[in-house]
Amino acid sequence: MKAKTPKESQTVMTEIVLPNDTNTLGNLMGGRLLHWMDIAAAIAAHRHCRRIVVTASVNNVSFGQPIKLGDVVTLEAKISRAFTSSMEVYIDVFVEDFRSGNRIKCNSAIYTFVAVDQIGKPIEVPELLPETNEEKERFDAALRRKQLSLILAGKMKPEEATELKALFGK
Ligand SMILES: CC(C)(COP(=O)(O)OP(=O)(O)OC[C@H]1O[C@@H](n2cnc3c(N)ncnc32)[C@H](O)[C@@H]1OP(=O)(O)O)[C@@H](O)C(=O)NCCC(=O)NCCS
Image 1 (tube, rainbow, N blue to C red):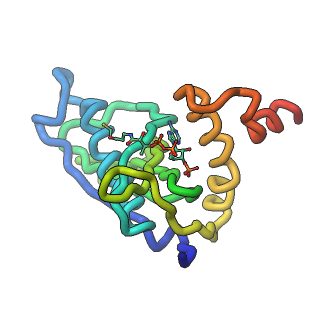
Image 2 (tube, protein in one colour):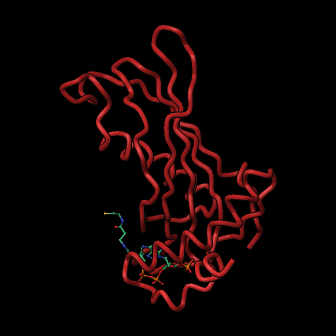
């Protein structure tokens, strides 16, 4: 299977915050942003492996500041590492102010997707070759995040998390 670069699967999605997306303060609801992030990340994961992908976990989501009615929200999703059947996807969220047009990064999240066959069984995905410094940093730290996510999901024993243990040993 041919290895791919993050650029090949990069997905950019732009939305505008409409009244039905907001809470009673007129700010974007967290659940709506999670939904948009899930879609952008799923498309990036699909572009990487060209198979059906399912969300396996959602981590590191924080809502730093409110996003307002009328703001333009841009989501950039990129694969940060591919394992055997799973792919870690980074989503960076930028907001363009309605009046000034200034664009600021307002949050990021990390999703894990798994490629599956027609009956939902995990299947192999192509390797990822990071290119830029940021892509290499995210690639290097992805195994630690995978082990933490598996421990929290009760799918890995803490003593088996070699990468995490090495971090605390430093
Ligand atoms: C995700 C799913 C396919 C994993 O199936 P499984 O039988 O647990 O398969 P495995 O244990 O072999 O795991 C498959 C891969 O997922 C990874 N994985 C599973 N759970 C994970 C988690 N919580 N965090 C990170 N990675 C996870 C495994 O590490 C493995 O990765 P690898 O093959 O790259 O090493 C299965 O749990 C599923 O279908 N879940 C529901 C998905 C869904 O419907 N999502 C929408 C939300 S409603």
